[in-house]
Length: 532
Image (cartoon, rainbow, N blue to C red; front, side):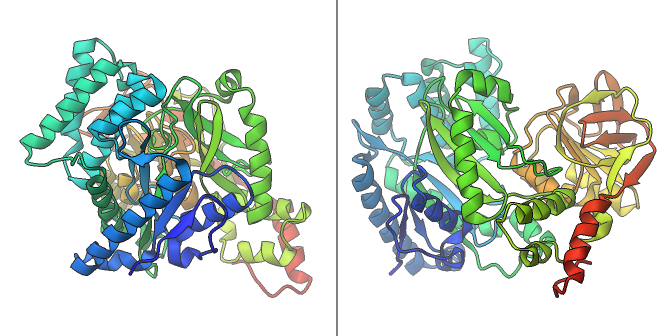
């Protein structure tokens, strides 16, 4: 018997992150604060190992638990899973006891069967929205659950875009999206694969895939790098969908309660209109500016500001919050302690003490093990005019040889070179390349993408959204602002300003001595915890 944990109404018995994962445990606490969270239920971490091993009894228990959880969501929302009139769709997400941003799988819009698509059209009067949900489900299910190569779907999408004379799927109307969904199903059939139309079978397949993603290569690599081999597995969080793709006053975004690169007490917000969460955190889309967000949704920033203040007080730390806006209404999908650079970690610790959120002893504990050498601020001695620029995502500067793939970065680093990894987007599939690189540059994406978070956690300078960067398909050559680059060429990047320079620049270092001295005074006052 598998006991599900029900979340979202603030009425469930509290469960620990060791049982249901940090994502679900944090969401339960958010709901208890009265902050809007879509109802959800969780399958426990304890089931992970058995599902990964293919245990038939565990599979049957998972099916029963999923069925029980769907009944709970239907009752909470007054909708029915896969219904033709009032359909319920769900997201299926991972959640280990410690955050592993972007390393495990997610499947959105589960339940978007043929009947449910008609139901979404009836509910909203918006065929484009309904077929976009079906498109998103088919893409993620085909690659995540069925294992179909993403290129097969990309080729089908390119054919539809060409026939409609548009450059992106967001420019396709409802009729074209319907044809795209059919083309995706045809591609699955050609590979002897199928996306079941039965919503419950979709849900079982998605939950199984999330559990099994625990043993993916990128997840295992991340756990090794971050010394998380002791973790027992992932939970599966099944949550009612809220729709950032519903209309032009909807969207998906991520906000940090304070700047995680350098530490100022100012929120960092990124959002994509007409989108769902994976569009933002995957790094496949460059988000809107804060000015655009304010112009379209003037009430959002004050409302988010209030939520962030409440979350910092509740969790006593800087928060990384994923949210969705559905037709101007705010929903919180996730909150967690923000990944931060060493420089920001020092600033946060001191500021939280001065604000009375944590004690001096707690501040020193949070900095325990932090190498003071990493607390230097690096900059270029004479910056000059950059060759190109992008969005500064993780501070510091780096000088190294250009590499255009994770494999090339690892090879160059093994030969003793410092490396700048350049990629089209910030994909967490490149985690091994991140570890080998000294700095990271991408053509698209934002500061809140999963891979930008990982770069920040690793203390690597990172620049995203460099629109003039184009990497050749052979991953041996690139151009940046019309300048040709070959693997091994020298680059200098500034993660504070977003500037990118050809060649080698001289690096100088400065220490935040006042902050370091403050922590040393706390230690000398009789506190037993130390910093390296």
